[in-house]
Length: 77
Image (cartoon, rainbow, N blue to C red):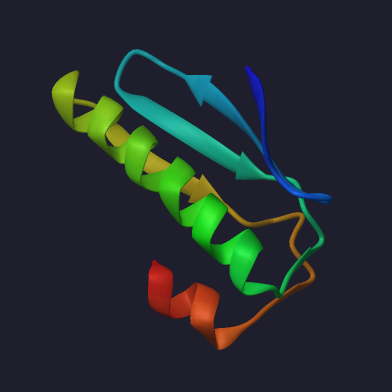
């Protein structure tokens, strides 16, 4: 399931894949640099984390497609 979170003209995109025991979040943006992107991605990760916890699943975040993220994004994790 592909999800896009829109903030003005910025879009943070990630997709979710659910297995029987885990939810995998694939972050598809190449650059995560603005405060708006970090806030929106952070909210999406929190929502997904709550969903995983309520269904007793693990959550994996895949940043394989990301080429650059600020230290502020690392702090959000």
